Image (cartoon, rainbow, N blue to C red; front, top):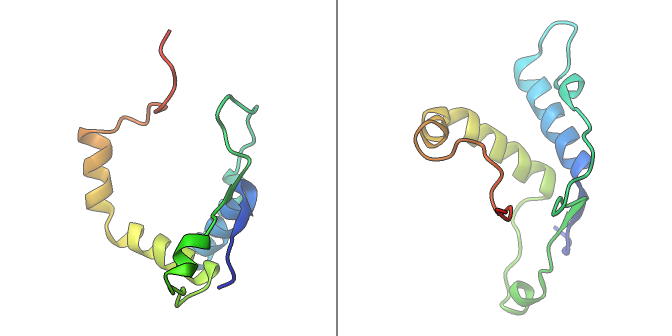
Length: 102
């Protein structure tokens, strides 16, 4: 994989939806249909970028590319639903983290 990686949020969301489409194959429907655009908000990243300078200096190289890594990540979350459901239920209530309280 060539680093640094730069991906727009919509690229990542689209890739995840396409992976889910292949796994679930919902008749006449795509996970892409569930993408919803919202107004930008303070602190919201429009893209993600990784500076891999230091890790490259240490000699590390990725053994898989971004698409394969995302596929494996989606599969992991599907396989480990019990784990993440427990986190949502007991600890994280999907509130926005890091926002200043006034």
